[in-house]
Image (cartoon, rainbow, N blue to C red; front, side, top):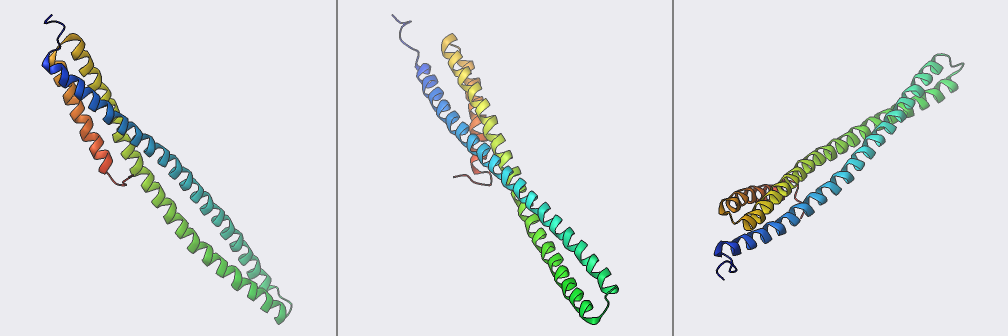
Length: 178
C-alpha cells in the first residue's frame, strides 16, 4: 500500500514540470514572433536596397544626360540653342543632387532596418536556446519521476533555471515585442 502513495517530492516534480511546460510554450511563441518579424524586416530591407539601386540607376541616367548636354552646349549653333541646353543642364544637375539626397535617406533607412533585424535575430536565438533548455528540464523531471531519482529532478531544475534566465533576457532585450 505504501508503494501506491506517491512520495512528497513527486508533487514538486509535477508542479515544476507543468510550470516548465508553460514557460516552454511562452518561449516558443516569442521565438515564432521574432522569426515572423525577422522575415518581414528582411523583406523590407531588401525592398529598400532595391529602391536605392533604382535611384542609383536614375541618377546615372541623369549624369549621362548632363554629360550629353555639356557636349551639346559646346556645339550649339546659336545662343538660343545654348540657352536651351544650359536650362536642361541645370535641370539634370538638380536631379542628380536630388537623387543623391534621396539615396542617402534610403540607405540610412535600409541600414537601420538591417540593424533592427540583426537585434531581433539575436533576441530570437535566446528564445530558441531557452526552449531547448526547457525541454531538457522537462525530460529530466519526467524521468526522475519514473525512476524515482531526486538528483535528476535537481539537474532538471538547474536546466529550468537556465532556461528561465534565457527567456527573461530574451523578453527584456531590445527591441521589445510586447
